[in-house]
Image 1: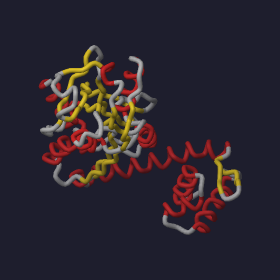
Image 2: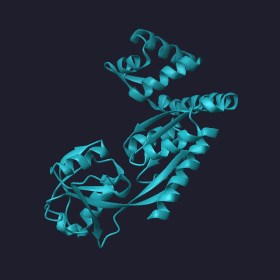
Image 3: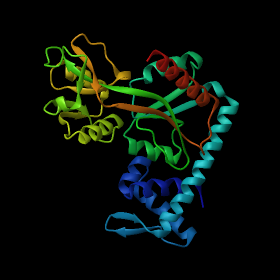
Length: 294
């Protein structure tokens, strides 16, 4: 059994499609198929059921997938640990976020301590983040809502009030606060389902008798304030994403504790590099300072 066979098997198992897997691996479909066939011959069992041009993991394949992921995970952790020990100032930090509003400030502070560290950040939905965490493919995640699962450590770092953003000239613009019931006939701009703030807001609004009517749903939270300013709709905006545009008024929500919890997450089985530990310290210090200002 070869490492290449395991890498190819994981790609096919996750996509269950040889053509797409070959494209992602930058190899020919025939080469990929032959490699999977050799692996099955080595193991003495078929790992997939063939259904036309598609593949489906069978029971043997499902069981072997878990073991293969664990084996490659441990090898990757060993590689990262050795790299960290030999050249800690030039290691790489892999991050995933469902909330990006605070990330620029956090990364700026981290860069002051580690100017040569390379990092890669992905903006994901909660379910996408869980997959990466479970596979150990990221060092840390900043998530709202918090995620609790086996092998995932969840540290709540900030409780973030959610405000209502309305454009100047709006019927509520001269107010400092508003009840949720007063918003039931408004048009909203927001992120798509699957992002923490959206799910929290929809749930609480439903509890008071309505679901927000969205005229825009996207995956770029930073765009919402521009849409509010343009009069497209009102928006629920976390306080940490406050944008001091002159033509927007932010209102507190009355009679409900409308907040999101921001959590730092990591896989407890993943090797934590020195740079990653310093990143966690920067996150704790940043949100600690925010809490004192609140």
